[in-house]
Length: 268
Image 1 (cartoon, rainbow, N blue to C red):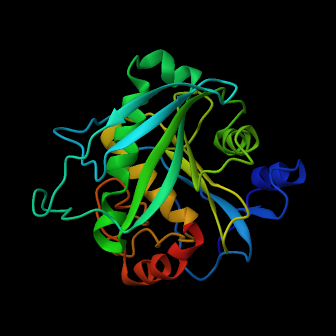
Image 2 (cartoon, rainbow, N blue to C red):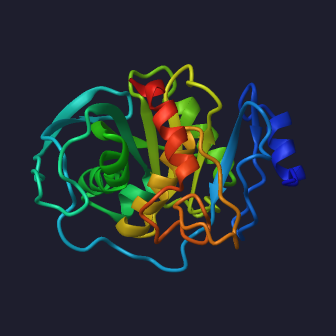
């Protein structure tokens, strides 16, 4: 049975999220299984990668999208066009566009924007890379319909995730994903794990660890948004939901694939 940390309990008592319990995943890595989570929604974090790693080569973009550029108030200040560059057989892992389009708002905090002048393109490319497995195995295509600045506030990753949710609640997007270089963010990524269709957007935040590692973390965190929990470390199960393989695997185990198939309807 996974132990609940006093730290997360204090966060909950402070009103992290109504009706949400926190998983005790720690950045040092612990065993995680499928059957021992509390009922209801909770929070899970992913340890940081051991290195900083950027993507090499072309990022797969499954459909041409005119992405809105928003300001701090949510007003549209411009657009960027990201052109489709995939076709049948062009990429070994992606033959076609997923039939289920999932709208995404991608946001970057002040620390992230200070590091990267091309932050808008960078976070779109990370999401496009993060959805490769979803496209390939479940015909789910994450489409970044808007990018925006964000001011991340909090003393740790859970508080920063809560801040993201409060900052962008009530929007029309199925997913809101934050990208941070905040030194207080003490995980590789973090997300809400939903036990049923969320009443609003699904939320996750990823640390800047290079575009390759951040894309892997984002795939892991998006998976949590579909209700997936972890495989136990040391189990040998090669799955992106196992901490041992989170930054290297490009598959889900059979149980997780069934969950995604069942829960993808949440985001139609």
